[in-house]
Image 1 (tube, helix red, strand yellow):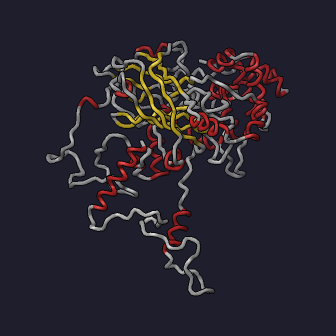
Image 2: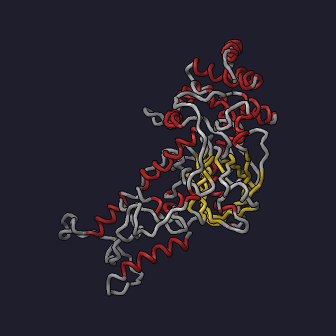
Image 3: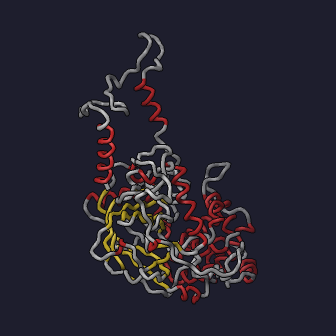
Length: 512
């Protein structure tokens, strides 16, 4: 990617130099942004020894202007991030499932990975009880493919229309600027499908001790499309070759106190020692006719595909620390709509909203030409009719910036058309039918060790103890009790709650 950036810069430089007979000056002088040398970078130009500073000091003005604009809008979520370069090597021939060349045997695809926390601001501690972003940009021969996931196979909500509310409730409060469990659990008390994710969040898995020691998931189902146009639904799972390691509730404060940049320092330290972290990529595969075999909705992102075997298809290795944080980690832009031929989105309602929202937020943060930035630019040539806008440096030439055209050299290939998906019913605005909000949360709790169960109750009851709204507190207890009576009983004891009240509320809940 660094070579591509250099080629891109050399190409732009050659265009500029070809328009003038003046030779380039390759000096070691400090220069202004236009390349002119700076004579004094310590003293502003003034009107005499006692006079005011002059506006004509263009170096001073430019220096202050650029400094004032060093910060771009922070990501609303995933603001605290860490990036690294590497490569992906497939280990299985998937031509029976997809035409995506990234899985071609013998290939090696450059990647950039951005790990992150979700709710914290850029300078916040990395050891937060928070999902971890796990976003991968594959620079493939068919364009860039972004797999934008987290460290769990599920999410809190199943419809993107609720995403702004979910974030508002969990971000610092609009009045105090401080995160408030009362607001978070007020939202969750009215969002029963979040019970499964909350059970994961408050387990030891909710606090990985480093980015190297956690798995990653694409969360949503996607479609693989092969050369015959046949469709299979798939889910992605990155398995850490380093193994999974977590922080227990009593270890979190000490970890933050010793180094609240622990996860970045750990990742970069390992790479610099050439202890390159690796993750194996596994997929689950279903035929479209198998989606309805579950007792829950197969495209509900609050659910796992339990019982569906996984198949290893490749390995990713991270082997280079970026030279520039801003131009890589901060300016990198990920969106699940950035797909390549052979991979298409499923009808998952949360994914459908993310297809628009993620690309739109990057356009807001970085401008209409964010895909032209070196970190986001594909390794292959881009031939679109998009043009102009702020910071455009595409080098587009020619009069034909439209289509169709009889004089354009650009062509289209029908084999890259989207696959046809059967539809049924009418337009609607109603919830999915098979909700089953609690069962998988209980199954996850039962899978934990006795220590893991105890840690989950310690962490969860700690936050629930700060909820002052009794209705919300008892609603949450009824959800966890519905998921698993043992989990409910432990939380009731930890919070000294009224067990009969919890059981009465829980009995009224449906898990179908």
